Image 1 (cartoon, rainbow, N blue to C red):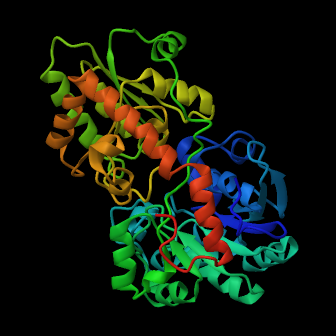
Image 2: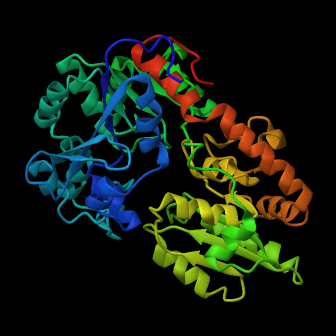
Length: 445
């Protein structure tokens, strides 16, 4: 139920997700803007929308689109939020012409060239992110909605710097979250980012190492860093009968199934580590019926396809698409026995929370934000291993594969952990207090 402090009229939050354009994100998972507005749910973005609604917050999601000719407004059908679509600025379109990957860490990677990029291309790469936000249109829409606060997905982005400027001009406080962006690559950011972080109202990070980095590198006082995790809808993600879930999916009942889901990014998600670890698990249990199930799509789909083709006997099934149907994804999780997250880098991942809410024990690598999920170790519902360590991952997976009683115990603890720390009412209350300025520090942990 809403917090007593959240009294008064409804307030409007402007929420800005990752990417210079929304297509930077959607293209990587095989979706378009129509699917985003009509069917996409889950993740930190829509979790914030739903968690804040009971506390009197209306959300407008602002995105920049390559395909928009004018400002458009569409409803996000699953949550009722408004999606405000801003056209890509002409200067940004020119600057990114010829860039295969505008978000890449070097101009050579951005233009996919083996030679040193030309001066013009290097200049375009440095300037492009700062040309991506149509400030006049954004400020006009912020005023139109009477926004009470602006929240940006990542503070280590040019979009955050632009929003801090916009917020100052329209006199709206700006906040930002940590979802994995812990570094910047362009020289201009070295000059601008410290000033932006000092000027913003506060940042949200559930990761303790990231909070320490902000204090060390930017001298941000602890009172400006809110320790709030990403929220999860425990009414949508819950345990179901495993046999019924398997029967509905046509999975054999006798296998022990390990599952993972999310974007297909080989290095960031540690999929190379997972494949090596799984190979070791299978090799040590030649007489066991085992299956690794991968669910998702992304920029490294072709690389994964090649690796799987080279391992025909690995007992791996890959559903190579992003599942928008959340009950269907819940069924996949409930049909499995163990969840695994092998990421080298995260911010605060929602995917393992979805599995934990379904009563699955988890084996997770200690990427940023992940240790906070299993704060009490096994008592929180899973096993934590060092990122990039295939042997440790294989050992932890093998331990759960071999011990059904341990799986049941950790699975029950996982569900309890999510209900007590990551449910909408818990996280929504902390976010509401931050955005309204009720709590100055230490909220939401």
